[in-house]
Length: 544
Image 1 (cartoon, rainbow, N blue to C red):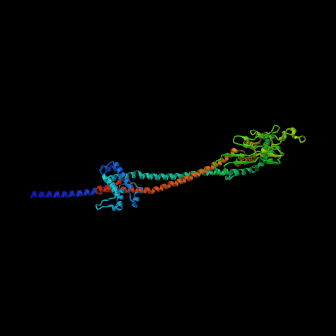
Image 2: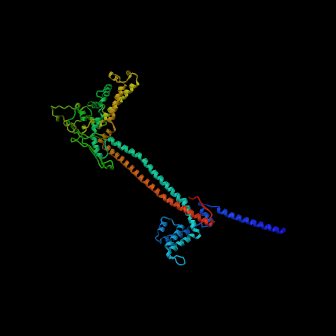
Image 3: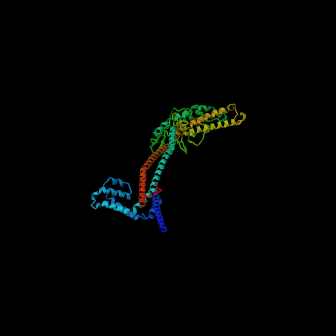
């Protein structure tokens, strides 16, 4: 009995252990099915090779398959599903299977009683599918496509889209930056046209019209010249010169007269100023190109008198064409470099003409020098402010008077009483205090500013300098072309920005489709590997 009981106990213990072991096996199997398989996409190919699921190198097999696919595509039936499937797609194993499924419908008429197809198309694509499934080539290729999409294709598309956005933003920013120089150049162009008093539509006609109003501008600039008479008298009393500031005195007394009247102390019977001829070739409007020829011809009077011209380097007062017996009435007219400090010699002081004796006995030829019967011609027909030499002398006298007044004001402000002031030698001088000097100085400054304003200087040099006229028109042309170039650049940048944005929008569906295809490949790879491992859950890590 004891031995029997012992054997029964052993048997029961064995059965119990066996049942427990079976339960443990079942638990292990259940736990293993619940454990997911995590594969990083960077190691996906190595994982497949290490598990002997697919070969390491599939390039030769893929080359053969690609050749067969190329040949098979040459003979395809006309089917909407096939056209949609093959449009813009890199064919892989799964596409080949879909093609075979479509061909089962289009080629079902070639199927024999044994279930095989007589169509060569079907045979070609079935052969391609078979080659793909041999050694699991399809799984390795799909893994490579999936990894390439994740690592290169999708990031590359995203970077390209970001770059397009940045380029479009740079174009828009560049457009905003160009607005400032465009406004600046346009403002300078408008200001210059306003200074010249023209609109810029037809420069040749407008320049001639505005130059014809130059005498009115001169007259307007010296409308307050009488206000400096006290300053001239003060300077004359102080300097004790016999002739002091003769041109300013003449302007105060007679206004802006002709040079003829200033020299001969009488008004001419008539004035024949040289004809103004302004020829600007191919510069008809502000939009025209740079002229190939630009010339200002101020003409020549009948008696040979020529007008003066002024340029940036030299003042040329022309040639009077005097004969041997001609009298030079004003030496300062032909010597532009000399400065007249106030001693004026008239022609009447140098030459005396007796009407009782024939003028031929004196050897004097009056004809051709601007005194032809009291008619002002050539240089002497210009007004004092319009003749380059006399205009410069007037400005010199104004600056001289201004300098004296400033010195006088400085002395009055520095010294305690008028007894110690230099030049305070007369009652008339000492009666002027600093307030009156400041008023005189202000009047002189006003005359200087009006005579030497921007518009007057532009028009004066335009009239007397062909070179300046050419530079002025060229400057206007360059400003206009600069604005046009900036506007053209802005339009180009605007179109480029719109094009870049359009390219960015066109890539959005491409990225979405590629992302969808990649996710589909991921699902198929995970499903295929899961079947090989008892339907365990498979996760591809590192993908989208």
